[in-house]
Length: 331
Image (cartoon, rainbow, N blue to C red; front, side, top):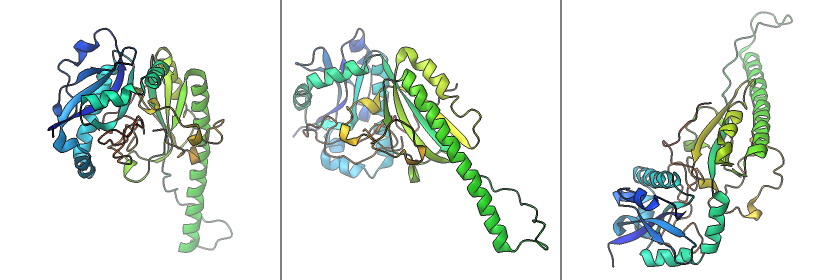
């Protein structure tokens, strides 16, 4: 049995300078990156590395899913390769840790889908991904209110508590209405500038590292020549709205759009934004916390590959760039 297996980062289309760009480029486990042509792919290649089987075979990957440091290192390396390649050509990112026993099996599995891959690459050509999140800020404790005229003396502790809770609820409800307004503004901007939108699960629990409550977590596929306009308008979506923050990250390679969405997973009504219920189907999770290509790594699909061939040794699912690599974009 070979001590090396083939790690596949992405499907790429041939472009001038691409071969030279991978020379000296390192990926997972520090392994050199190289191009593996697809014979039936109309100028398509795989970006791959030969990595140690002791770390990347299926049983090893299952063990490593408990090692967040190891996963983060692989995620950063994976993302770094994608970013380097996307500067030169259209890239179809595969899931984190998509691994085959050897080059032949990797090429055969993806060659079988070369027509689908070519169509998807054409859809993504000259596009970038922007991540958009809306946060509702946690309301500060309201200042103590003076006693009402009917009150004699200070309020009882119970009445004072209820008054404070009512005030906090009012502030929170106002912030959620503002978040809905911001979401509608962003969606309208998306209609004008974006080709596609992916709705990811909102970040909760350990994934919710930013302050406030994450009520919307979307990604937009935007033509590269409209990216600045999209960014500028989205960055102003919370203007004049209290208790709401919009976080915009990118531009990224199109992590969230590498896999065509399944119509069965689409929300029943996509005509209006609903930040209170935006944890709808994750198309793949592009770019955070956990998902197909983002966060630390989401081990929800170990043992499959992102193309659905079932021939991979193993993979973990992510969507969005790895945590800690996001470039916040200033308006």
